[in-house]
Amino acid sequence: MFRTLRIMFSNPASWIALFLTIVVVGLAAIGPWLTPYAYDEIVGPPFSQLSHDHVLGTDFLGRDAFSRFLCGGQTVLMIAVLATTLAFLIAVPIGILSGLRRGSFDHTLVALSDIVYALPPAIFLLVLLAATGPSLTTVIFGIVFIHVPRVLRIVRLITIDTSRNEYVEAAFVRGEGWLAVCLKDILPNILPPIFADYGVRLCGSIILYASLSYLGLGLPPPAADWGMMISENRLGITISPWLAVAPAAAIATFSVAVNILTDNFARSIGHSKRQENA
Image (tube, rainbow, N blue to C red):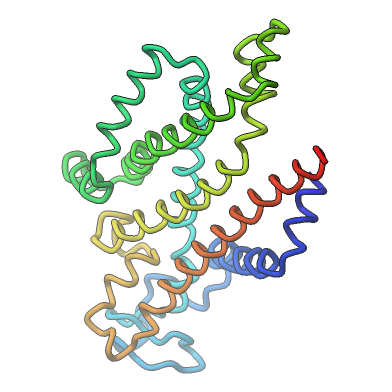
């Protein structure tokens, strides 16, 4: 692990991405305790300009935009990380087992994943929320349901390719069980693409939730949420563009930074393994 981290952080891009990730996560985590005003308190006229008292001006109701920005990141990041992590915890072991054992179990999973894979994610979530009503639990379930078949397909294909190696066949010859082979021989060798894919899926989760929040299907008003901030202030975007730029920039920065970190970590695992085998 230390060798992997050393290789990873020999790249300056990893340090920059880590710094940006910490900044955005820090804003989301401690932001609500740093707000100069309550997030739902009306403190001035709507769409007032930047000032010493209002760093980002005021929103369409006259609430302090900076206070709402500091309070708006927790839900976006928590839902994205939770939903993506749950999807991988479900899909990775099933994908490994499917790719290793094959047979009717594998064919059934592939058929089911093809059906879910064909569903447009945004439309599926909109229909799901229209049927059940806006709920963060439903949003998390919907994002997990969308990610699982996609992750499963990738893990299954990597497992099939890895299982053709001689060390996997040797493990079965030694009499090792399926679980031991999955944990000791398959999983360590498929971690790089899994980490790389995690970054991509996390970005997708953030965009999905932010889009739902923009459409009013996230937290109910007057709660603060980065996606909702963009939607609420769209009528005044020509007057106060920073009201939409600030939350959009935070979402984009976190997505890109995490994607770079996970991709570089995945590459570093591969480099570390090659050095060990050399």
